[in-house]
Length: 332
Image 1 (spheres, helix red, strand yellow):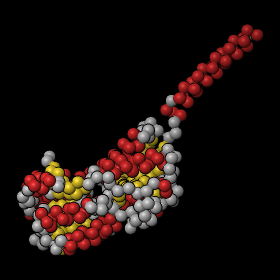
Image 2 (cartoon, rainbow, N blue to C red):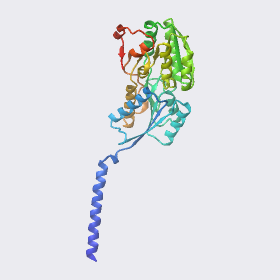
Image 3 (tube, rainbow, N blue to C red):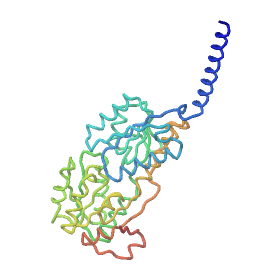
Image 4 (cartoon, rainbow, N blue to C red):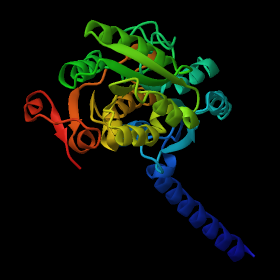
């Protein structure tokens, strides 16, 4: 009986030793890492916003926050529906995510309305002050900051090019009156056009299904069309391109990804880059190095006027090689 007790004791001791070894191994492995849940709310699906989301995730990965390792993303697309943005934001709050990445103005506004505690990083926001997200670029909110897609010189460069180089005197603008960022851009386009002796003809829509009809309504009334960084219109940009090509109306846009899809020119930057800038901000917050309130809102770090030669030909614009002195040519 004593031998049996001694044997059992040895077995138990060995088991405890093995368990101890296993525990130490786990403590050194990925299972012991702090896990983060990030809610990604994107207003619509189109190349610019998609690129910003990819840039955001890459920046976090570069800073040690890797999907499938210590980060889990919950990606939700509002499909350009304002009502969906609120539901998505409220669900993130209910799930107690560690941080919310809000891609585009409606998603950012909905996120801030849903929480004043969870850190929010936004991007693709044209006017963060006017949208009520922050008091000023150097005075972000208690739990929110991010990057804007409104470089102060971007719209001016494009409108100057349309009026001075292409000769547009009547500029059609297609926009969603329900998007605050588009209203801001419309006012800017009007001011710049008038300063150059041109006029703006408005074509307002409320859903992507109305975009083609809005483009067709401008035929015969304008010399060129301008589409700002309006998520609803950009999500249905092919409808505008088809009208522009068919009726030989030069189309200009507010960002480079849309230019590549078939517009004559855009003065802009890569949305991937502002997404990446936002991701670096998120890494600072998740690391505990800074709070959102300590990180100023940032502008895009680069700006380029880019001309799409193929689109120009399709829409009746004669490309001048001297344009290459102040712009870049995009060729597929």
